[in-house]
Length: 365
Length: 268
Image (cartoon, rainbow over all chains, first blue to last red; front, side, top):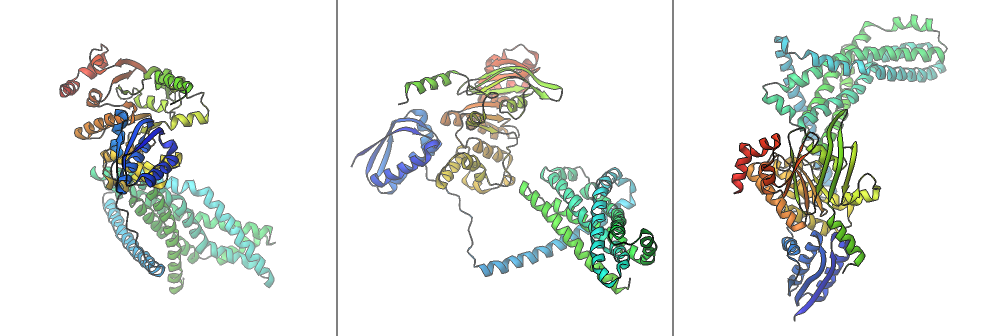
């Protein structure tokens, strides 16, 4: 009965660990007693000290005793009284306990569902874009030509060096590997057919599409996403403007035009890379290469490659802008959406390429 | 009891102003926003900085806390010359101040509670339990409900963002806080609550407050002293009553305008 606990010194965050220990010891020893706590000797107290004094009082009380704080300067008491209340814990988010198998199945299910909703939203968005395109074609003055040219420069012109370079290198690598294998049959000259047809039908457009998905698709997502975060998209809407018409159509069209032109350039660069290796490494003279090339390259091969490009541009543009519009408030969400934009568009480009391969094989092109 | 030597040091610190700015010049490119600013902020006071748009109120704040490089002059915070301080000294000062940015600058990918705990995690070795208790207490001190702790900044209203950001700025029990337009974007009642909150925090935590504001009610209600910026320097310094007697045309217009009279009326 009637214990006196005299506290002194600095009760501040700097000594948090010691003070916590001290409070725990005091509660051990004095819990259940009637304790008068003399805090007149405390020189400084901050939030942490105040919280711990509150904890001391409550825990002694919880052990069946009681504690009263005595002394202390008025300005200290304000803080100490403010801090002395039951800790209000937020209802912790319920952690659902699931077994691993159930979780896996659920994850797969969610994944499938989300790709279905993705596909649905792409189709809906494609519809909206096509409808806007139709409206713009009826009223050509409403087309944002300046914006289109600006984006065409960023997407197309500025990408020329890097796309020419990687296509040249990939063409060269394929030629080198082919020559290496074909040499065994004494058929090195067929490297011309291989590089030529492969570049025309697949390589040029695929390399360009992947490069643009990483280069321009991500930029579109980040631009539109940060506009969404700062309510700029909402501002466009309330000014009776159509976000699709103002922001998205010029970007997608620039991508469609840009990718078509760039993929032709990539084809040429890739063939040039092949020719370079054929001459330097394969011992095929440039004359032979150039006379053989036209005999293997048909209009069909050219069309197969070129026809695919606008569709790929469309897919990249759609995915990039949808992901941008789906950005929410946080910086993290912007990062996640940009990643998703690049991953999904590269994946869809390759899927689309596979579908085209089946289609062209079926019609015998 | 503290030793005499450190008691003397504490007394000396109490006598020097918390912030001492001398001959400060700062600007962007070849445009000088602040030309020659002299300003003292005394211990325990709430200083309101006013000025027309573009007179460099926010620049002054950002120069003092080191976000805008200065061209000339000297800034001392807690008696430490921020130019000559080494990294350690500078960090020691930085841990003693908190800053409330105009738009809150809460980390968008963290919840309110995690935001408040960022300085605690980085600068202290509190136990998880204590860290939670501190965060929840700060939340209560700024008048937010416990349920707000697990919300993300994008789920908060403008007033809640200000309060949450204030809770983060006082997480480490600073001796000094900088407020950049704390009541802008709040409704009058919310703004008045915020003024009350600042006064309460000063009482409980013993804060010194450097506040950039346009809010005449805040100036009349919460500030002990006002410094008016104009032409790249401090035009006048003093209590609101002294400001009302000032003769500078801009001050006359600002403190004698209809809105200022309304604020003065509300005060009585």
